[in-house]
Length: 181
Image 1 (cartoon, rainbow, N blue to C red):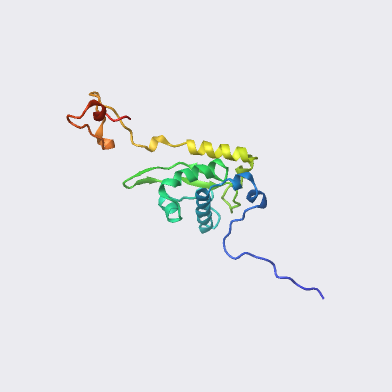
Image 2: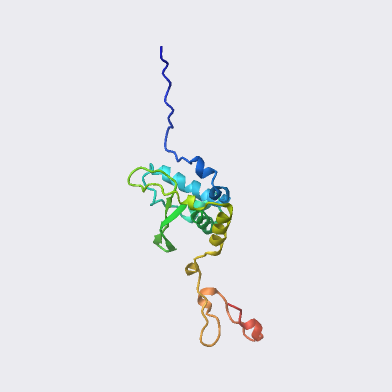
């Protein structure tokens, strides 16, 4: 008499992590905030039924609600990207009034349903602890400066205060009147 065993199934959407990925140097060096970024994007992937990898959208406010300080979100995204777990498929812009465009993300290790692209497992290019440390230090140094306010100096030598809030103090010594850029 043969005994039938019940097939093991997973109920609901899921994201699997391979053993090779979990023991890789890239995963070992992945900072906590970068893991939280990946967690949030995995949830977004599951909420779309596994079909939107490459078009996953999470805003800074979403990441903040997920437990990451707003000031740490950009670094965490750069770190996850540098270690090969994440790719930014479309870069967003700063929001101004109703004109908003968020980043689109792709998890490189996730197997999705069509039309999601197949996994590329970019984390495999980090083959050692030194390569992981170098990728993280490069991510820490790389910042987008085009999103920062521009400090301009006017012709009379005063700093333009319209964008920075800096103003020239009347009657102040020269060293105090002009603040360094």
